[in-house]
Length: 90
Image (tube, rainbow, N blue to C red; front, top):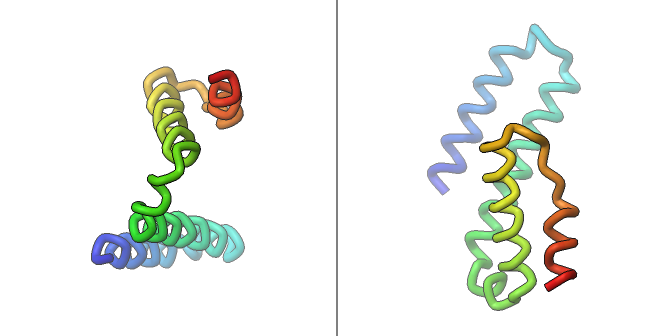
């Protein structure tokens, strides 16, 4: 929770710093995206025992992690549909 508060505060300060340089819509969208990701992470951590009991959820998260790792290593854009195709073939 402390990490989420720290990141939210830092992102608010960052968006306030650049608020004059970009449109208010861009600042709002960026802040909304960051807070949505943080909220999703908090929900996943809170409900992890329930989420991990579903094999499909664990396989999907594992596949997405592998794709993100490959994307960062190769520099090419990732495609989440690839994970779904892999799971359908298994």
